[in-house]
Length: 417
Image (cartoon, rainbow, N blue to C red; front, side):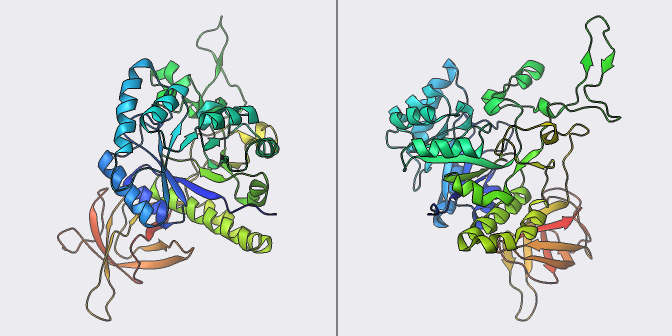
């Protein structure tokens, strides 16, 4: 018997991205506050933004999980208690769950907010069913599997844990070179601790070998005229393997990317939403649309794709040795924040906060939550004072647009790179 449809869990770095995730197909989103999350360089959420985001998500039937998954030091503990108290007292809506990795943070959360649902982060190195049972007995509802597990191992975990305990697993996004993301490279090179949310991603840097008695003589680790990137993994992508993911017993399908743009989030959320729904309609429907899924998932930034550890240990083909750059096929222009209806029969004006330059006369694309991509022409452009302009060269300008076909609120605008 096929399991209940799994949750699609999408990251959000800001209120704008949260709303995008909700509109483009998320069942749940995970976000970070201004402390205790592992993405200190993300915009993250103030308490007011978090409250607004939770209300918006809940109004659309979407859950919100808040990360507090640092590996805490003594000085963090009293502040953590205050933070959990703030989250507990949020009105009119609270977060649906906390994501935690540190046992001390877990204990504080349970003490301050006994009824809160807690999910155990991948940072806790969750690689076997006894670990899952340990956290279950302490009161955790869900455990996020280590990225180093195969689907066969996850299926074995499912067979050994209670049916109502949930498994969450990453199915798309960047892969960390260190075990369960617990990396010391950033701290060593820059003093910025990955386990405290300040990772500088040194796994993407260029490296060589130096022999001890020949300082300054750099030997490439892998022969290539462009150098070597020995820690630089391809990105995980499981869009072609939804049936196998479901069969393994995973309850929540997690997308990596709390540093990513609204374009990334919209693209990935919409594609996996379509794929999951199609599979639950029929496996034939799912496979019939595979070319569309693969084409669409490549329209946001990525570093080539791999299936990670899911079908066995990765080999040399999962690494990128000649570059640390992303593939970037489309450029993000903005989200339709408001639609201003003009006189009857005329096309409406739409307001966006522009993210990249474009001009009157350009052909751009409206990306719709229902899966349609509509090519349009920019017929007119106005600044925030409704004065006509020919282009918008300054990032985050408020711009009004008249397009050859009117979009709807929350549609996303993009252009081929």
